[in-house]
Image (cartoon, helix red, strand yellow):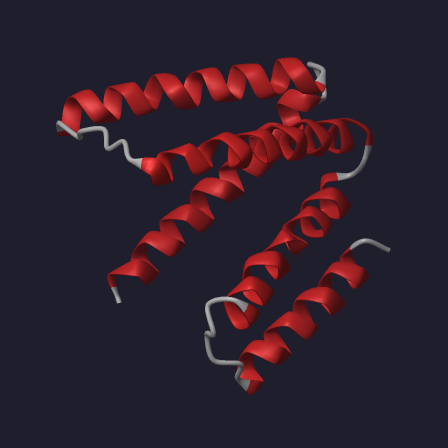
Length: 134
């Protein structure tokens, strides 16, 4: 259950990132917002690698980062543009429906179990997003 601890750390980190992104995007355009947040993320990643003596791994799976990075850039630029012009209370819940993609992928491709709790979770996520975006 160690993954639950890390999931909560990610939840807190992304919560802080979302609030900070809203504040920053009010004063910078989407490209500048993305650049500066990515720059500092990369800077801290380098520090983390050096401090904790992490090593790089490269194999053919690392090449998947090319299309994933492309989609990430498109998504993040669109997210910051939406955040600049729209309310965070609508933009963030709506864009967080991205979770449906890996959930459905898990069901269809990875053959992860489809349970009543997971179906209800998807339904409630959609309902919550609809309610928050009105």
